[in-house]
Length: 236
Image (cartoon, rainbow, N blue to C red; front, side, top):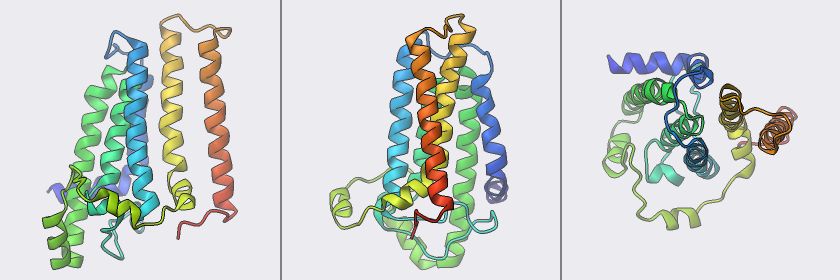
């Protein structure tokens, strides 16, 4: 049953998951009394998740979207951070989501949106592992026996990093879109909070800085997208 649910979420996640971000823009109760501390801590958590995703993608690549929005793998990836955790990208996603909810100070997102995301990822992992077990058999069984599903085993991480080439072009190509979404979400949610708290003043340096950062990340997104469309960034 859980595998079928995972396949459902995997197939429809590009349409369903963004809808949950709407929760952070609703005017609900704050999760924390100190808004600035929540913003600071949330950004740090989100950045840690993005760092984990970035290192994972830069060292070794997995076809994250599957094929025709179905779970698919042409090889069993166990290099880079996949040698220390079977699902580093999903761990990074969860950290980013918790960070976004914390930075946006959204009790609704943290208590409703994040649990839905966690359940969806748990189901997707079950579906992916069922597929990998069926396709790779004993190779995947041995991989599971030596590498944790969620909690990274950092033993030998230094040796892993030394022995691999980091692909910056692949990182930008694979991550520019998702990175832009969570960064823009935090900036817009912070502006929303200032508005509903009646502290939004266009002359306020904080407000101006937030808008400037939004412009910067938007321009960076546009540049990355242009370079990708022109074939100037290779994921090899």
